[in-house]
Image (cartoon, rainbow, N blue to C red; front, top):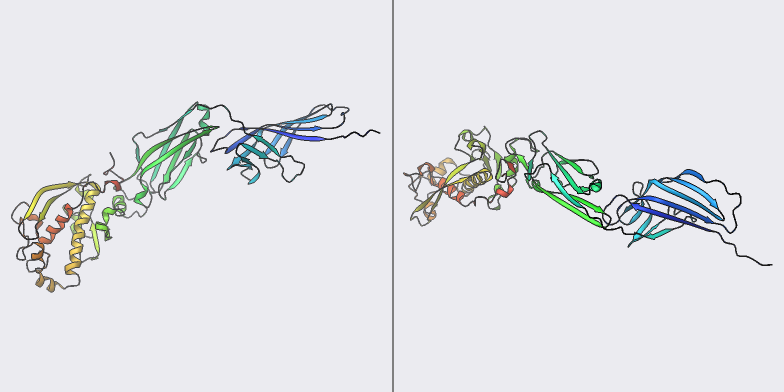
Length: 439
């Protein structure tokens, strides 16, 4: 008797094509062809006609299959136009359900449809690289000025639109947009998946921090097989200066945001600053831009409505100095400031009054102050000679000239302090419209 070794073999073959693109191999891979082959050790008799049917694959979709037999081979060929594998961070499977049944290492993909079935073979193969694709990507913003601003609504809204010019245009749907936050403003993006040729970004609610405004970068990225392209569009974000749609909503936007900047912290100090308002009669006077009132919240500097000087918030003050040995003073003309610079110099002016009050006057009665300051210039008589002032003169220098309106020596020192501000040094914090950086 002769014994013959009879064997049965079963194999599977899977062909995939990448249809969406991310970094590396990330994306969706369509099943182009799935073949199951059984080889028997005997000739199959009475071949049935080819059978076509739809076969569901749990977690992945459905196959359209056609089975046929011939000789000793049974073949089932399936196509999967509606079945896909997800690849994410070198894992292969179904991302929505978290079912990962394969992996990629290097350029080798290993996958099993059902790892719990010991008869399900492990499919493995190298990922082939297609020919290099030549394409270009360019962002076209709807606002070509390079700046935009939140509107005057409550809450304020900012709408940005961008379009990706892709050549060839067939790849436009694969563009992925990277959208920057603007502080704690709410972001709405259309389309929600941030993919495609066009994108609309809506920010709702002005951010709570001044630092959230300014330069933003919107990026478009395109990864097609072995090629990568990206483009970045830069835009500066501003707010309407004189409306009150900031998160607090109590005072104008300029005051709410400028108060957060170093321009409100003279020499690194953090005095309390409030918006002047109508409760201060001096704020109702055109020439008064700020005040320090010991009789009301003595720790507080009050800034008036700076727009009363005009649309540019213009201020003009003398450039003065004096010699501490009492030998004279200089007047070097006038300096003009605008916008946030005006805010900075009036805060600096009042901060000097704040310092002098706490150094010489706080806690003293009016009678004590009168006895210590007989010329009523705001500086105690005992202190004046050391500072270069005459204790017998209310305004020691230029009292009869162009600067007689200064009035008294304490005010002279406050004007001297304004000179120390470097014009333009606060501009980078000013994201108001109109303002220092809106050009």
